[in-house]
Picture (cartoon, rainbow, N blue to C red):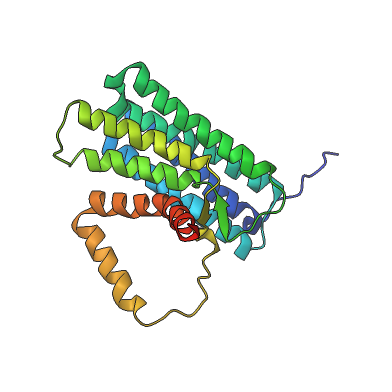
Length: 239
């Protein structure tokens, strides 16, 4: 008689399904970049970021956290927020730089993987903060810059290439830094909010709707630079 395997309840499987969706979005983003569909590649990366933002929240709310889910999330992040953004920015902007463009993309990929490895091997951590720029946020910076560059009428030529190189390399460096970044995953959605949020949030969303590439890039870059700026301010106060 065949042994029946225990079925996994939907409650336990749902968070991993969301994580897998993020992995699929990351892979589809790479395929879109291969076809020079850079806007589509950016949208798919943003979808992967949202999947990563909500899979952990979903697992905690459903009490479905597991070692398997943690490993799947890490592997998904390596592709969606390591390989996919580097491939996108290389295809869209860095290719004309030749070996230098390839080096910037490789630095980003290696930094993303090293950051994930460091996160997985650290024992106790303050869940309110991340050590180093989270890989989804770094991917958002790179993706938003690619989207912004498609609409921006800058100086062109070598200046744009150097800027793309700098953004990619800086995003990678911040991932492996020791700067503490506030964890957006620890936001309590059940917490009571102040009334001015009902004005600020719709206004912010309206600004994004008016100029999505510029506003999203500004938002992601602000978060990426927040920790280094706070570190500099603290050091200056000690002088």
